[in-house]
Image (tube, rainbow, N blue to C red; front, side, top):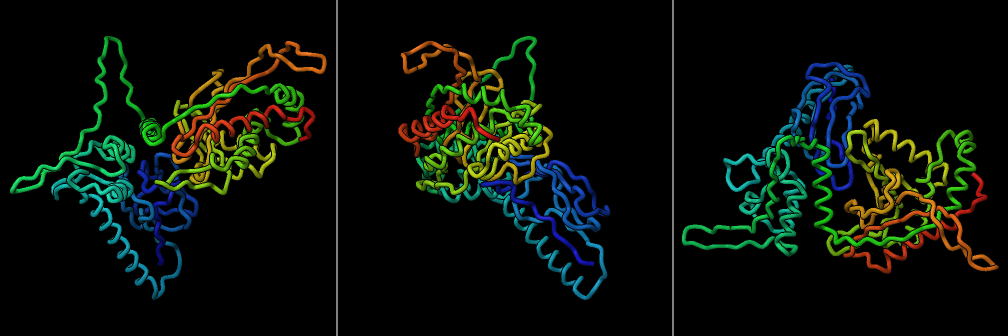
Length: 431
């Protein structure tokens, strides 16, 4: 019989590894095509991996909680079919690849200061260390916040930031016998005292990843936040007028988020410098306008599914995508593709009746926009016969941006353009 390798898939931009959190099969089990084999987790999403073929599980290479590099085989499926002369050669190739995978794993575990240490270094951490000229000796001394003290990307970023330059700089003391490298220690978190009645709740895996990602973003990007107040009266009146007919005609609810997303997508086309990422000293202007939307999960955690090609969709298309992705997120059924490729993020503080917020940038993007709650306010209205006071529906938009590449003129201009598009919304718009 021929065999088929199940490889660790790439689960998102910049994702180099994933953790196996659950196996649904064992060696010797018979499976059908699309049966779920295992569950994996990254700092972006949890995902179930199905089998693309039917057959028998011949070999499982890793166990639960193992961290596996993208592209390495995790299992071998023996496919149903007639045995032929090629089967032995196929098995030989599989065994060779298995040996390569084992060697790669062994190499990862040997990247340390001495051969007796079994500290794990992921491919991403090792590549960062190589790019920044960090020796094995220095790497071994860096404190890790990951599972079992494992070094994470955030740990490496914090270490480099604390060194005060793009390259790791260490104090070197030379003796006749050896060279001792002493890195500057990372800041120690403040100790926390406990009082009677306090409860201790351990962060779950997803919360730890979110915490690492947020700390890393603040260390990498100098954040600046600009705020504008926007009159959305026309939008409120239009939605109240058409929402029932819209749902009846298109089968999806029309909320405010598709309207906000449409305006943001148009403004990103007008200001491509905000639809960007930073790679060292290079600014990458993104061709696609893929807008991520922060979704609060029932667990209290957060995830950011992505609306692809948002600038090419009308309100019906945006409403369908937003409703679908939000429902999948809350049911923990997002696919890897659903959370990849974001170029800009929007978060809706208004759903919690908050008026203003200063969001943290979703790396490697350079900006994130927060929408506040819509409130009725007295406002000055200009008329041909003079100014009058009237009741208007208003909201705050707040944009946090990376001041390395987005200055006030660019960030402020983009934010004002979003506001202008919202205020110019046609109250008689057809749908």
